[in-house]
Length: 279
Ligand code: KIV
Ligand code: NA
Image (cartoon, rainbow, N blue to C red; front, side):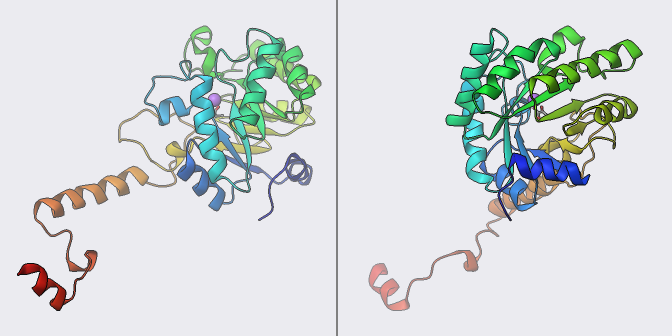
């Protein structure tokens, strides 16, 4: 497969072919995403929850993002890689945002950055793009702002709230973003926003009318303990947790019973050498 570029993504959008995006947080999850033929890999700050055991994304630091981005970049050879700007790395000033974005590209080896927020980010987005870094805007449910949003809540459920989302998207498009993530909003709202924009939208919990979809990899592969909360929009396509724990339980039992390792998992020694050794 050929390396995916912004041009590839624009062509998919123009053809009306949905863009497939998945998150990755380390080398194996990135490698698997690439093998599965994903157009885009997102190093989302959801890695704080899925790879670090945090309660939410607000604690994730630049240093942590950089470590995970580098690991993903080694695993994803063809997909276009986007890295999240973590909370605290871009809000203070456009200068801060440019510096953080440059670090994600230079040290994290991602191809573009994603930024959560709305119209207030116009000047910031312009500055990042002037540095030659493609920007994905993230509107709707923006988890870094959960304290202000009153938790992980669906957005755009009133006409006023939907209008705000559309305005945010229009201003961010004007500032130059090349793509949007639309998170947790009614499908009609996401479809309307998509139809008003000239750049692709990637939906998560935003229905089938977007220009593409994204899911968190460990959610859609079922790589989490039974009973953990997952949002309504997650479809579990596999049962990685079930398969991994099943294997480990069998391994533990076979260790305890000495059934493992049987001879085929050992290294042989010749009878002559053994006899000499045993003397
Ligand atoms: O951090 C993340 O994984 C994300 C996606 C859910 C869009 O931002
Ligand atoms: Na994120």
